[in-house]
Image (cartoon, rainbow, N blue to C red; front, side, top):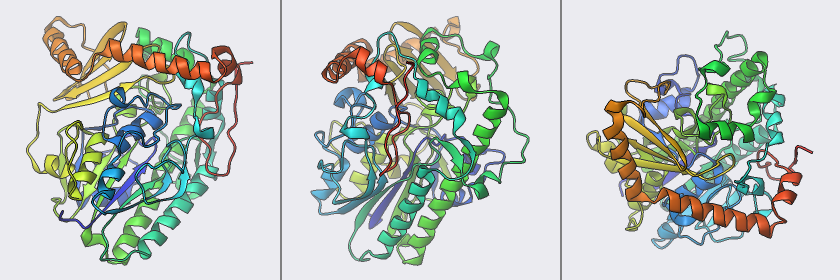
Length: 481
C-alpha cells in the first residue's frame, strides 16, 4: 500500500460528460479538473446499476446486483453481504462515512466504524412503488422534476454544505500516523434542480441548446423504452423554457458539487495529508438530462449509465487517461487491494491502480443491469471495446459503436454486418448471468415485497415520493388519484 489513506468521494447523478476534463465545452469544474490533471481519469467508467440503491449496493459489496438481490430502491444494502468495509476492518483499517449512503439504516453493521450525518432510505424500506413491475404505474411525483427548478437553496444543497464542513473537520481531527478510509457521499447534482444562486448565475445568461434527440420524432422507438416512458413521465410536465432552466440548474449543481470537492481537497492539503492519501472521485450513476426526452437515470445511455471516475495518489501517474472500461465494483476492489486486504474470489473488480497503469485492454468487459422502476423486464448492459450492447428480456437488443457514434444516435443491432458482434456480446452477458432467470428471480422478490406491504393496489394508490429526503425532512408522496 503506497497510499496510507484512501478517500472516496461519491456524488449522485453526475453524468460523466459534464466535466471540463471530459471535454465539455462550457461546464466549470476547476477542482475536479485539477484532480484529473494530478491523477488518472477513467474515460469509460460505468455504474453497475443506473439507480441509487442497487448501484450503491454493488459499490458496497463489490458484487453485481444479480448476485446479491439488491434489486431496486426498496431493497437497500443492510450488511448481510460482506462489504469492503468489513474486509478492511479485519485488517485494522479505520473507516468512516460522511453523508449519503442510501443503505437501510444507521444501525446495521455495514462495515464502517462510524457514520456521520448519513442519509438512508425512507422508513428503512425505500421506494416500494418501484417494485411494481407489472402494468407499470404512472409516477406522478415526476412532476416535481419540472416544478422545482432554478436558482435558490434546497434541503439537498444545505445538506451538501454540512457534509463538506463535517468532512473538512474530520480530516483536521485525524492522527496522521493512523491509516484510514473515508467515504464522503455528496448529493449534488441530484434533483431537485435548484442550484445556489452564485452557481446558477454561471450559466444563467447562456443560450444553450435543447437536449439531443428531444423532438418526439427523433426519440428512439423501442418497445422497452416506450414502456419506461409510460412510468417515468417527467417529460409530460416540461416545456422548452423549463427544459433550459432545468439544464442550467443541473450545470449549476455540478459547479456547486465541484466547489465542495475543492474545499475537501484544499483541507487535505492544508492538514498535510495530500501526499499520503489516494483520492477517488465517482458517482453512483448519471442523468439523462432530457436527452431523447428522458430525465433522471434508469437507462444505459451514456448520460445515465456512464459515470466520472478520477483517481489521484502517490503511485498514480499524473495527467493520464485510461480508456479501459471500469465500473463501481473496481472502486470496491481498489479499496480492498490498496489497503492490503485480499479481494474475494467472487468479486469481479480489480484495483484501479493496476488497470490504470496497464495498456488499454479492448477485451475487458464491464457489466450493468437494471430491475427497478420503469423496467417492464430486466435490462442488461455489456461494454467491451468500442461497443455497448444492451439486452432487454423479451425485447430486441440495442448495439452502439461508441467510437463511431459517441452520442448513441444510431442503433446498429439489426445491421447484418453486426450480427456476429451481437452474438459475441450476448455470449459475454451469459457468461455473467442468465438474464431470463435473473428477471424471474428479481420479479418474484419484488412481488413478495409488494404483497408484504399491502399489495399492488395499495402501493400504487399511495404513490411515490421522488427523491429520498435529506435527514430531518419528511417524504412527500404523490399518486395519480
